[in-house]
Image 1: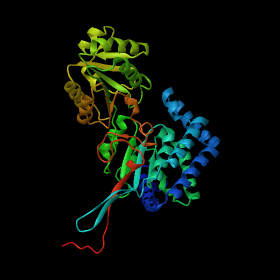
Image 2: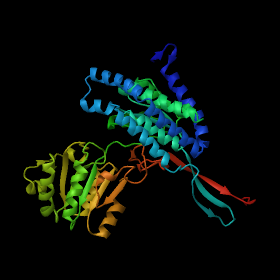
Image 3: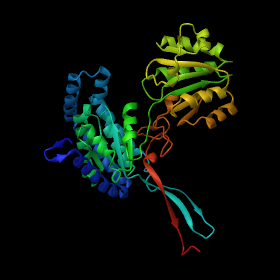
Image 4: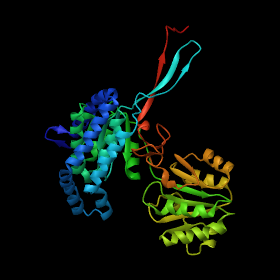
Length: 424
């Protein structure tokens, strides 16, 4: 077991977790003005210490470059003045969101006169394990604070100096606002053992949210004793129904694949009804080709788009995260839905159709976290759906499904008001 002096990794992690648990009680009682004051101090702190943050970030960039990390990875790690400003502005956007804590969903009266309802409360302590992007430190902390939770952050070793510096600013802001600094906790150990001990701290942590690649998320889910919000990958589909408006469908598909191909809500498979395929596929494939998209297709599609590449079986369930698209012609909506059930990842699916009844059937029968009608899959995002900020997208139906905003970082408890009732 790795140790610092006489302190083991386990002792460090347990100490952080215990302190966060104690801080969570105070956070659960914090008022909206108190939490907003802490968030405002966080935003000011980030702006006021931009040069220092850049200096700390430079240490991570130099270490990453010496290890031969790719240009894309270095870009994710970089904290420019603009990105620090974006972090501060993002925190201020969270301030503007309504506080969900204490909200009573509804009340109903029982025959004995008892009034029963449900009230929204914080989850308690949320552990977040993430890779690469230092901005996650600020984004996640802000959402957890506003929703009345304590948060334990464990970022990747490649961003240790940046994450630690951001966390120090956020913790100072909590103290300035009269809230416990330990409600924003950071595990500064970079060894894998720290994650393992964190995932066993079930008496202190209520929920684990991993953010990163599929390998990280699967590893966390396999080792954790604590409930995990999972999002392994985004194999997102668009189904172009018979009688679809081709003039509308083409730009939707281009946007879903091309705007940002490396994100989880980009379209990865295009399903096309055989009745619209002869008109639609030559048109959309020509546009996709202009954008450099490689098509991996079924035999029927290949007969209409001869420059495409025959698809392999593995292509149907692949999250390409690139300018690559799998395309299949289907004989019916039933076949399209069955394809999505077999190869999808419960992330995002869309139907393009002019038939309301068929659209409603697709919405009912497809179980992904967001199902759209006549719109791009790129809308599966907290900001785009009107939730404000989000901490990630869950493809797990328990406890949350889809983008996780403030409300999804809380749970509901029952409350009841009586006037002397006793049970007979």
